[in-house]
Amino acid sequence: MSNSPPNFKLFTSLRYDPLLLSSAENGSPALSFHSPSPFYMLVYHHGRMLEAAQHFEWHNVAKKLADGEALSKILLEKVQHYLKETGSEDGPLKVRVLFDRSANLSVELAPVPAVPLETLYPSSFDPPKSPSQPHPANTFRPSPLTGGALTLGPTDSLPASSPQPPTWILKLDPLPTDITPFTSLKTTHREQYNSSRTRALPSNPAQPALTEVMMHNPCNELTEGSTTSLYLFRGGQWVTPPVGVPAGHFASSDSSDPSAIESHEPADGQPSRDEGEMRTPFPGRWGHSVRSEKVGSGGQRGTTRRWALGKGLCMEEPVCRDTVQVGEGVWVSNGVRGFGFGRVVE
Image 1 (cartoon, rainbow, N blue to C red):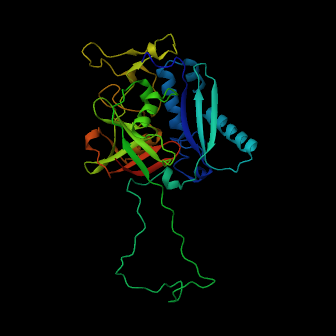
Image 2 (tube, rainbow, N blue to C red):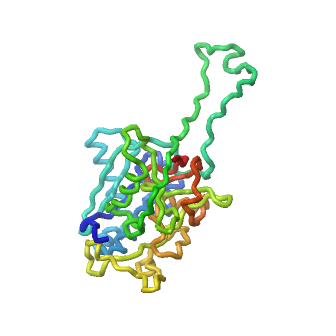
Image 3 (spheres, helix red, strand yellow):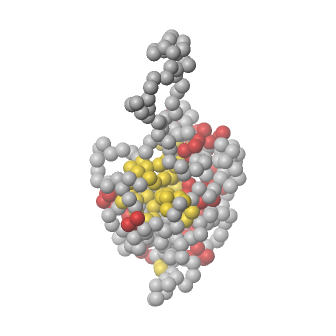
């Protein structure tokens, strides 16, 4: 930890999308401070930032985050100002919310691709169905649209096919990533994630945007993707790796030096108490997670992951890296793109 930078910010990235105004799920009090809301699971993002502020003992940030409704109003004002200044149409945006230790707020906005509501709130983790291909031996069947003709007339039309969601490409990191508060909580100190992507995903100008690395800890257990939560099919159900709790905390002096992190583990290596129990609780803090018994065993408590666990779409269970197979289907999710399906490649 001595190589960590002395300065970093807390942040979270979420989606702004006018489409969410039509979502009753997104407008529920559990996910939004106002209904309807164009912000994707804002309550969960707010809670995650508040937890990080409490963990690092950034008291001014925690005070500023005490009012979630005020945060929602500020973000909406930022979006409206951005749309006016850029002359952009009202469409989906990535909203990056950052706080420094003095509680100064900054918001970064950028356009993102449109997606259907099912991508943001899927009803299940069934793999997307590919369009069926006709067998070469199939005989010709006249279409009712053409009256038996082989070509369409000037007033004929074919039903529009629904676009298939893009497929993610996933690769395993060959090396483990040590678990620290910076892998358990979302901050701008992301060297470990950048290193993982560099190892598994060498720079390639033609590389697809939806390419992800599957990270694991020194215990050879999967933790997360570099920008996503992971869901794998094990034992007849979809599971997501446990996230554990941060392995250390900053001293009460409110130091911004990551080298000041203290460990809660005694000499025998067994945690004497759960670090999470030392922090001020707030509603739904741990979501549906059962938490790992090992302090610092996993990655971040993703907002979409928390929602999927709460809806029963998956269960929390350790996944050994060695069980991952090339060609295996994996779901991923994050607070900007929602949920997506992908395949593991070599």
